[in-house]
Each structure stands twice: as C-alpha cells, then as structure tokens.
Image (cartoon, rainbow over all chains, first blue to last red):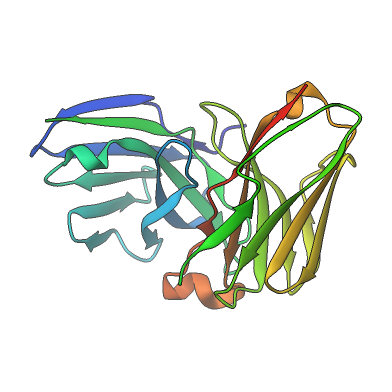
Length: 113
Length: 117
C-alpha cells in the first residue's frame, strides 16, 4: 500500500521558469511533510518541511503548499536553475516522534539551460 | 556540522561473506536509522535506534544485524546476504521526539553501495 505517491516520475522545465512537483497521500494521520532532494551517488538532502497546522511554508526559491482536504502537497521552485536537477522525494510522518518517514517514489526534475 | 558519514562507499561481497557498514554523526542526535534503497525506488526504513536502543525493526531478515555501540555510531552487520540485497544502504540521524515540531529533520549520509555476488 503506497501511502505517499508521486505520480510524475519525471519533469522537465526551462531555466528561470517555475517547477511544480506534486505529492498525494492517503493516510490522514500524517501531520508532518518533508521534501528531500537527491543527487546521484549522494544521500537525500533535506529541502523544506511543513506541519499540518500550516498550508504554506516558504524558504527562498522553495515553497511547499499543503491542502489537507485533498491530501495533496506540492513543491514550487521559482526560478528553476540547472543545479536544481535532481530526484525530489516527498516524505510524511505521523506524530511527534518522527521516527518513521514514508517516502514517495520520487520525481526526476531536469532543468534545461 | 550537519554531516553523517558512512563507510565504505562501495562494497562487493559474496553470499558467504561477513561484512559491516559503518555510520557516524556528531550532531548530538539520539535517533539513528538504516534505510535500504533500490534503484528508482524510495528509501525503505529498516531499523531505528533511539537512545542507543533498537526501537523499530521493520521485519528485516536476520542476515542484517544492526548495532549502536554509542550515541555517535551505528553499524550494520551483514552475513549470508542474497543477490537481491544489493542496494544503496543509507544511514540517517535526527533529534528524538519534539524536534519535529521545531522543524527538525532526518539527516542522511551518502550511503554505501552494496553489491552481493
């Protein structure tokens, strides 16, 4: 049972444009959501997170939006840069311990110069 | 310092070998994790240690044996592995408990690429 889904395995955008990566979840108990970026041969790197008490969190070029009623979150990258090309994983957790992260399958973002 | 280090970077082993993966962090984190990641798949949680005690074992076969000798170190002992165990093994660490509410996260190491022949 895939509780966190990223339905787009890949996304290609032009440099300077907006990248929008989407994530859906089925477990209504999830209350903390994270985005990780992963380059080849490296471990995932934390990008941005959002608690279920918020609907938006912004950090520089990165903004995460949470729609709890739709069980949907998205990551917006504006403006996109070639260095943003990586695999992006959405992850979710339940409760305060945060020990168990459930990951989506990832979206390969390619930003073309 | 937000670094988690893992050794070795690459490992090739036969099905009868015994080997160990090592992970180290000096962020004062008291939770440490082992994940397994197959190509084009998300990381899958294997084990969680909290305050040096095993708190989560996701029904991992006994040929994988974790060990947490102290708060900075995490090992994964491997014995009699199968070719399907070939994967990237990721270590991570984090605060325990309410750290999540402060925007904390899990910090990942670069992984060990394991090939079982």
